[in-house]
Amino acid sequence: MKKLLTYITLSLFVSTVFSCKTENNLDKESITNKIESLTSTDKKKAFLENIFFEYQMILSDEERTIKQYGNDSPEFEKNQKGKLEKDDYFLTAIATYFEKYGYPSRSGLGQYASIVPLIVHFYASDNKGFKKEHFKYFYGAFKFNDIPKEYFLAYLNGYYEFNEGDPFVKNKQMGVSEEIYAIMDAMNIDY
Image (cartoon, rainbow, N blue to C red; front, side, top):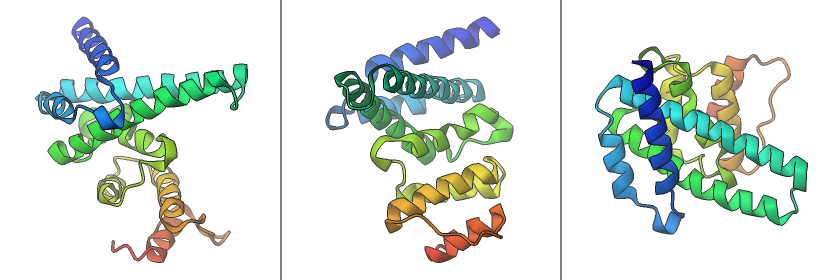
């Protein structure tokens, strides 16, 4: 069983790397077919965990490139171009996953799979991940404990700043839950 999961994960990784294209050439039909082929819990979990580990590699490579060459270097620019392409792929894959299956359940798919959408949306270049049509999935995941409230707060702060133009200024005495609902009130979001 372990070899099968390793094989599935490796296969998904290879196919993900080779199917990434720029936003203008993103093959949405291929992504939709890939998401629709996730017919079992194991396949969904392997697909999402693959994205989790690949994104960790992307972020580590970005950090290494900055340390080695600086963020004004041609190497960093090349790194960012590759990250943008993968961001487009992952954001499209997650949006398609949301439409087909909803937010991945922590109890059904595990900790890593359940935070993948959050990681992809939060770390996407140019704040591409803070789209209003996806907010309902993150809020639902928060309400059903699929993501910790501290993670949802971090996402919500980014979402607020992207949509409002400035960071949310919180009262220093607010707890995490109070801050979440204060931000939602400030944005006139029903809950």
